[in-house]
Structures are given as C-alpha cells and as structure tokens.
Image 1 (spheres, rainbow, N blue to C red):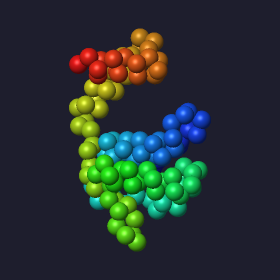
Image 2 (cartoon, helix red, strand yellow; image 1 turned 30 degrees about the vertical axis):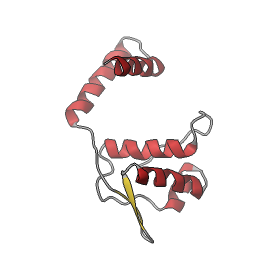
Image 3 (cartoon, rainbow, N blue to C red; image 1 turned 180 degrees about the vertical axis):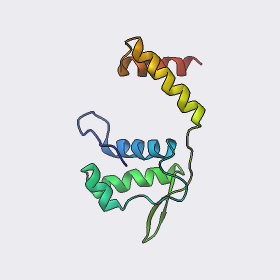
Image 4 (tube, rainbow, N blue to C red; image 1 turned 90 degrees about the vertical axis):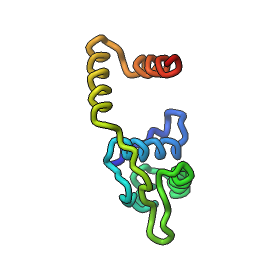
Length: 118
C-alpha cells in the first residue's frame, strides 16, 4: 500500500512518510476510520526507526488527519479524497505534458509557477 522513501533525496524521512500517508488519504485508498499499520510494521516497511514513524504520525495527528487510540493504534480521522473529475483532469494534463516532452521536474516547476500566479 505505501510507497518507499528515498533516504538520499534530502527530504527528512518523517516528512516523506507524512507525504505518503497523505497521498493515500487523498487518493481515497485510506478512508475515515481506517487503521494504519502498527508503528513497528511501518518502521520495517520504510526501513526507518520506530521514532521516525511516531514523529510523522504525531505530526499528522497535529494536522488533524489521523488520531491515536492508546494501546490500539492510529486511525484516519478524516478523508479528503480528491474528486474523480479532478483526478481525470490531472491525468489528462499529465498525458498532454508527456506528449509534449515535458518531464516530471519541469512539470513540477510549471505547476508551482501556475499555483503561485493564480
């Protein structure tokens, strides 16, 4: 279910874990009330220390995306999945960018520029 983290990209592991969990929520793969895997299991999945996972989950809890149930685990508190029409638009835009030879790095730059100026 979860993607891998890249220990060499300069982004702290706990932030990468947060991004992965957020992505799963946004894509609707994790829904309100779903239990996340145990901390120990997530640490093994990501190849990090349990404290790193706990740090990311505590930050997600602070943001209101997950909640901890003492002795039980962490649960998705809210589901902000992306509307299917938005996902369709994104998919079509990505296809068009690929057809025009725009790579991922340039796509990120363009998205950020449009985001700032809109």
